[in-house]
Length: 509
Ligand SMILES: Cc1ncc(COP(=O)(O)O)c(C=O)c1O
Image 1 (cartoon, helix red, strand yellow):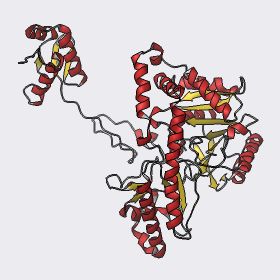
Image 2 (image 1 turned 180 degrees about the horizontal axis):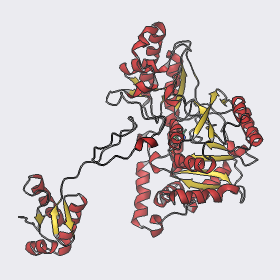
Image 3 (image 1 turned 30 degrees about the horizontal axis):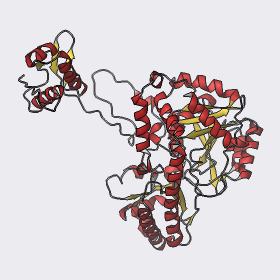
């Protein structure tokens, strides 16, 4: 190996070494398995400290260019296969061919497929009304960078320790105060907060704790797709309860509970995803009376209460819960950063210690570093500023969509202007289905999720979800106008829908 180091260069000596070795590998002059000098030999040859060459070798090893075999030396590494991404749209894998009698994995396969992301529109330039998530352009990344840099500047060992399974205590206390401000009794012995890895981990923990083999839960129809994925993954059955303009139909639920069909109820009372509806006060009270009558827990998904654009603030259902039936789940995913994976459970104190034990067993604890980061971000008043700023932006986007719908939507269609959240639920005349319409819409440059993607039974209906949170106002206006034209064409000439998607599975072709 012929290497040279220019000690007068601005490029550090260790970088010169690693760069030259990589160059030799790239040119094929050093192939897999070729031995290279030991750290000591190379340091001596180049007149450098051992530690300089050691840094170069560490970097090369981290990039898998070289590997050290104990007792035999340092070599150019063999080629590593690129990791393969698992295709979620296809369900089961194909299994490799081997001589041995292969394991029969099929006996474990899920009876029903997961809801993947509908494909087909990936590479087209479309106005996508599909994503109900915060706009990355509004993420407070500079602030997050500042807060995390100051944490790393004076790192404290506890950041990197395992967290208390209940979560980083100052953040727990902050959320407890926020819950008390939202009307939930939070004095000692009333309710407690437990931090989790987002809503999904919180729900997973609760389902494991509350539901036994063969038991079922009541869910809303339509509903949040990830809820269905979680229940499918846990092999927990569900009974869909229709949602109308007042929220979950509690009369319907009463029948289901009376027949003993479900052992828990899961609901999104505020800014229901996907319909955007807030459950009426009467329905909330009815739901709590039913919980008391049938002694079933109610899990409240309160993902978006802070994303309110107008109207009176709904208190969480948990604030009305005098009999300790409600377990509330909150999340920072939609109002701050989905990638943080921080959510929380607010539960009656009577069950809190049990749930902390369940959490300890299930995942030990979450990332304390991220919980401290979030707490420092909140303490610096950045969180409330961020909410004020983003809610203003999202309100304008909601208005851009609803104003265009008000102007352009053909009569016979309906939508409800949501008071918060990220999406509008649009209903076509009852004889039209949203899935066949999707193909026409994509051909004209607009993408959306048809109702089938959010229905527990996957059947298509005359509804579709339009998300506005990640798009600029002009794109929202243009896309909504085009969609209205597509709907008008389909209403005037239903034959146009014949070549469209007909069933849920078609969305994945
Ligand atoms: C209805 C609903 N609940 C909860 C969440 C938050 O989930 P998580 O905290 O797991 O990101 C979302 C976000 O996608 C949502 O749409």
